[in-house]
Image 1 (cartoon, rainbow, N blue to C red):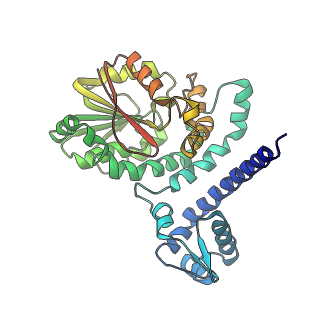
Image 2: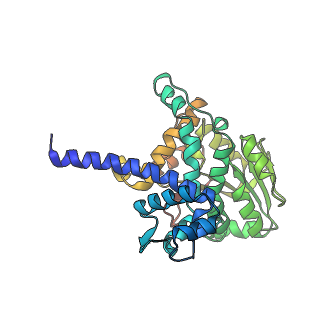
Image 3: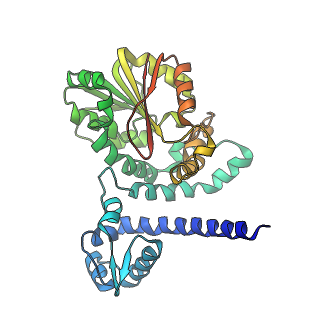
Length: 338
């Protein structure tokens, strides 16, 4: 064996294990409010952090050391600092740059590990409903900020003809709406629009219906026609993607548009060797792919890429298809027309 490659191999393993433990520590930081307690406070002693957080001293001490070792905190002269740059991501819940939702996904995903391992040999998978309410909460936390702050104000601006229809009272459906964040963002931006949301998951719809906005959320597919249908982070999860997209096709009004958001991934594996794709492959095995396979679906996977997306959409009967020039670290955007 090559000595240098052997060293690189074990270094890789240790870095990944360190990353796994860091994700756990970071999750503690968001759930306990430790990050918020340190944000904007500058250099703090252990006693300062304990006082600000009102948490147990020994736990706080070990957490501070772990986060310092991981590079999340700076340490000098016996004091810990959460930089403004790091706080921007870890102490900013409700914004489009908060990363805490990703950490919240880890427990519900890893909890099904025994069932996923079994599926490797026996087939099948884990249906979405079995991930529980904490998974619904994590997905909501991941999506809330970017949907609230970007969907209508940035993403949809690439389709001015669509926004004009919504402003005039057009009809919009979010297909696979989850807890309803896209529909809510559209209704706030376009009060005259008639907005609906559909999802097969009753837990998600129950959460969506808690909004005070006038939005028709349900687990039954509407029969009306819509000027805009959105389908966000959903196609790759479907058990029958082409049949489902055909249903969506038939719900679009003449001149209407399908707006698609999918995880950012390249078509070739060689181009997916980066942290975002690595994270998505993990999400795929433990969540996206397995829930599709659990329902007899193809298990397209989180990283199915643009070519597969276009193929599915065109096979479903859509004539127009284009990738939209919208900048994002984690998403790709498309528009399709019947």
